[in-house]
Length: 300
Image 1 (cartoon, helix red, strand yellow):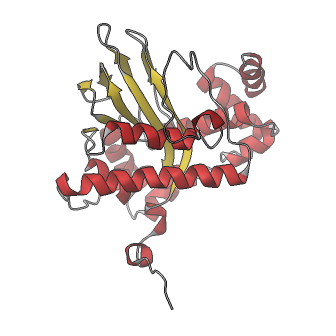
Image 2: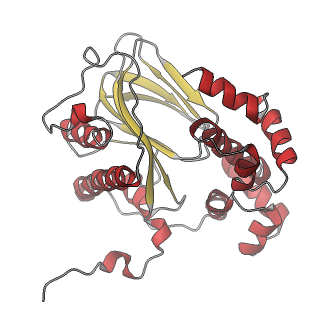
């Protein structure tokens, strides 16, 4: 008999290891190109291949250069800008994961910026291998990305379960190589219990349920007012506002990418009353869900 048994995951909460791809890409930015958002419902990592730029988070400004990577957790905002003199080229990967994921903890050690030990060319090829699942131009392992050959934005989409599984497996290979190459030079940090992070993870996992903040507080065995105070101190907004925002961002993606009825989308993001959902959506985006869908589909 021959086989394997995974002792790492055997007695571990599996949700801490689960990753699901949202999107990835490579871009050579024009001079001074700026991108920013208040929040997104997925985690986001950028790998800088060439050039320089600046990242602004809620707490700090970072001047970055080739060979570094920066991490923006789900539910937080950021803005970043390519240098006017030496604009960067970067690759990125967006993915869903539990806020307390030990993969992210081992890789970034609670830091925003790291210097990955993996060679840049290998990073590029692993990102291209994920892109190649839906774009056959990159199926050849020796193919490289060049802005002149692929001008503008050329996103292709995953359309089958088989493609989703294949892209997910290639993303996991990317993370396995990152962890493997990073392990030797990365100090081990003890995991600290963070009540605000626990609440954020709970909200991120259960936003599709008719959830109240008192439910989260009860699950964490604290008073709702105490939880709200800690959460706002840590993330700059109340748990209620975070929950509403993440529901709105998920519903916007569903309106853009699916043909589901508005009532079904409302239910999928935790609203039992579609009229209450429409009111919240219009308050958040300044436009009704139906108008938003028409606008997005009309811009394609």
